[in-house]
Length: 374
Image (cartoon, rainbow, N blue to C red; front, side):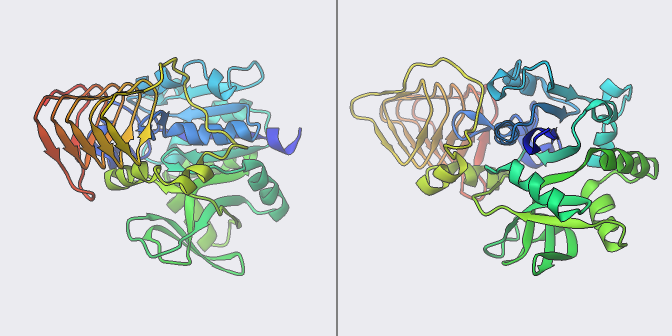
């Protein structure tokens, strides 16, 4: 096997559902729409595909019908193959009736899948931290390090209390301290929810830790093992752009950041494309008199009013005299004539009637549930 095809991928699709409120009431965090035409899971799935990973398991527990609909037969990610493919791993698939509490317990539902895999290494990943990364380089670095586990990190550029994640203090690239659910400060290494370790090693620790009642990968395995000296940890630092979608304000803010050309160029690296479900749509129609400024606009939109600093998904309609500012309009939303939408997140198929005014704030955007008419 080459380096690129020695990995199996595991994605945790539900792990942060509770962080997104109404937006994940009937869908997983992994299938949450992002950036006009994508779902959050598209980014890590594409990273897997671009690294030559041909076998992927998606660990899920509920509300995954929209995720299954989006992925379909997984041909967009070249995972509809005979030698691997994509498999959903719900709790009842292993004969269990309860849902998991942490990643280790979730992986216990994937033991049969992992035991049958021929690949030597496993990449574990969340779906809500978005980046474009060459996992072949990460694996090569992991093998060279001879450590038990490699954690993919980024260097915090500023103190940001909103990023409460896995934080690692280092000296000359070596780990000194591992902190969990800790607000990162400038200069610290912040985990991106991506880990590489040996498949056989992972099988062993899942069986042992779950039997001992330990369910959380970061706190019970990574932090505790490092602190007691039983685990060696390697870091691989990602230097590109990273979008932490950890809650509704960060999800809102990061969608709007896609209007930044430099960020788009890094996140949608032409050498490592981000794939998504293909839909045949007509081009967007910009009617005479419309004013669209600094927006991300998908296909199939009908635009007659104005939109500024916003993300417009497929099939959005903005009527004459309507005004959209700093908002996210998901698929097939309709803003009727003269309506005003500012600092809002409109889920799919929302209709805002003529003359209605909706206003939220940057730190607390107004959310309108899927299918509602206001």
